[in-house]
Length: 208
Length: 154
Image (cartoon, rainbow over the protein chains, first blue to last red):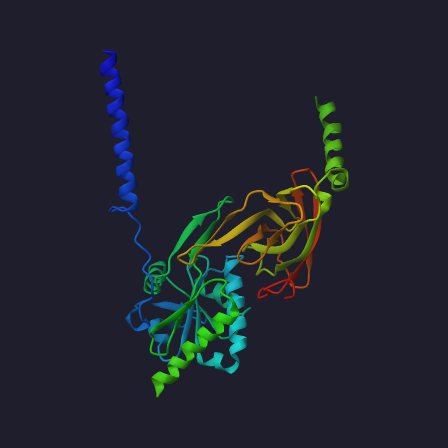
């Protein structure tokens, strides 16, 4: 009797261990694994999404083709990373001087519930005038993020509010819509400005 | 019970108010380069930055912050992972070793000011009180710079 009980416990323990291993496999390597973050954005010409800019105009990836482009994701309720990114970009644009006028610079919100067209208009107004703010329906934001291989997630906070995690890199495209490079968050400006110049030069090459 | 509690509370409050001088540790804390970004209205949380230096011989632990400007001020930390995804979470207590400093700077540790009681207006300033584990407090006056400010110089 005692021995059977012990065997029973053993079997249960083994079973539990097996289940744990299986669940682990399922979530990490198996069908339940999160989709690996694909490395590079697809060309703008292959993306498909419909958004609205901060002046209420309909926009999409095709709006950006024809000029070099800088795109980044964020949200206006973000107190730290997003204003820092917007300030950095404003600084890069200042460093580029007149060349900045040849670029599309777009801030796409990952929080369209709070970031209405009006909220985006007010927010981008505090930064470099070249920066455009795009918002729209949740599913269209999701399609845009998918094209750029950006990710974001809504995270509840203590006060019953929520914040967003999101890709903080800045994506650079040439005038033909091809991905050139990305500027990682906190990359020193001495790296960022030459990268942007490269995207601008590819436009010149494409034109000749 | 009530008779005992009220004087006790009064004593504790007095202690808390004077503890910057009375207790060891936090009196050696020096705060430099405090600044904050202006806010748009009161719905969005604000952020403040500073360098908190421990000039003493013993470690000090920052346990919390308070300010009349915000109902829910808290030290938060932004992190960006290998995939370039940024997230933010409460930083918990921060221990500063003797001679070391805690750097509250954009993209890292920051004083997150949730539930603002009034808009943060460029050119204004507000008091922010840092509380330490020895019971001591350090209050600093934080100047409010523009929304696009990148550092204490603007």
